[in-house]
Image 1 (cartoon, chains in turn green, cyan):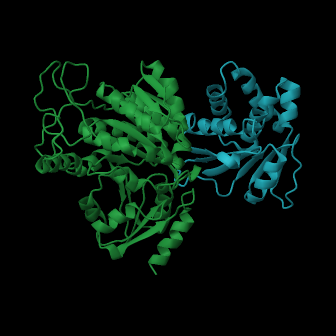
Image 2 (spheres, rainbow over the protein chains, first blue to last red; image 1 turned 120 degrees about the horizontal axis):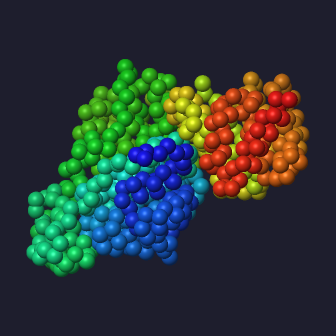
Image 3 (cartoon, rainbow over the protein chains, first blue to last red; image 1 turned 90 degrees about the vertical axis):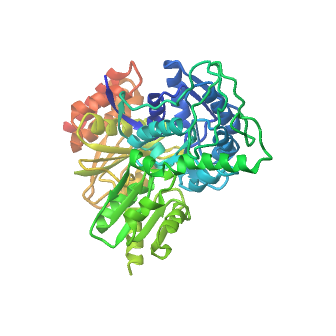
Length: 373
Length: 177
């Protein structure tokens, strides 16, 4: 059977997407509103020959995931805000060591323990900047249960292609709702490029070209590799005093993602519904469901990105230049800052809506009418 | 066609499961879209339980119930809390074993002694949720009887399919007569 129609929670669909993408290792520490992902992975992984480990905390969870990935296995963890904060140390380690892995963050209200059972989109900037240092990651934001499945697969694929941590930036709205979902068997699955088994690798971490993704010499295949979070040269050995090595290394870590921004957006996709209007609404994730409904009623154009990071300023300019733009998000303004940098900032407005629920379409319509005077 | 359904009662009655079954019937076994949401956390403590389902032949964007067309109330607390929100031309189906209705306008009410029927006819109080779901289906035609039964068979614990399907039939018969 090549596909199966189910009625699932977003979190359950995420776990199914991970399995379909080839994930065979999960380490995590259950936390609302992401717990159903860990629960389902604990059931499903043993069925497909994988391993599930419940860890002592979120720091250890991502550490175990990174270890599994270097052992050659696709690996994932799932959490919410407080756990995502703890994972930041290892987000940086994964970026520096170019370790493919998937981190699901089902966002809830914060800061701190905040609102465990309520929805939020306030970790958008943390997903990109949460760890110290110069790095880039991929972050995708699903608006439906189907996208919890599809974008989990995309997270694995982009993580494997670019050797970066990929974040499924979900929220409680889509994590907990149930909808129809088609679980396809014939999904496109990307595996990291491996060097030939036993090959002596002189330069596992080349510094050039500046957007290069080197093959990954995973453990147990006869390579000798040194993996470190310190600034390292081509051979993988610490070179912390050489400014040129550091500059080239971090430039490559960033550019391998940044230079592929358009490719990622085109491949993952986005909604752009163009209408005869001076107004364009922008929203992503669970909140976008409200905004799509409001835009239809207002007769306004609407842009719904699925890729949150890397941001593609040129694409946003191409689509939205000349509009009055209203960004709606479940925080006090995060994605909007990137939109402001891409467009004439005076034309960009924000409806920031923390509190635990997306705004109603009526609330969005009221705001749109207000800014249009 | 777009209908907002709220199923409510107290913890342990299978309120969430009833919503999941209804949503599944509509989304998997009919050509509808359906979204199910439920109460979590402190809201779901202290006995109250709520499971919301939106069924539509168009795409469902905003996922939350705003003004229910249909309310199922399986506890007095749930009735008191949610009955005032039901649309004027809506329908309230309540478990007459447990609920004393009091909304004083002419919104349509149908009482089904679901808990009593489940206990007396099937010897299992626990299937009262399926009795009242069968009644709701019979009264509203939200989904076909066949679709509902198939969804019940998928969603209930293995080995209890038969008694749950019987409960659905019992509820339907209860309001037909």
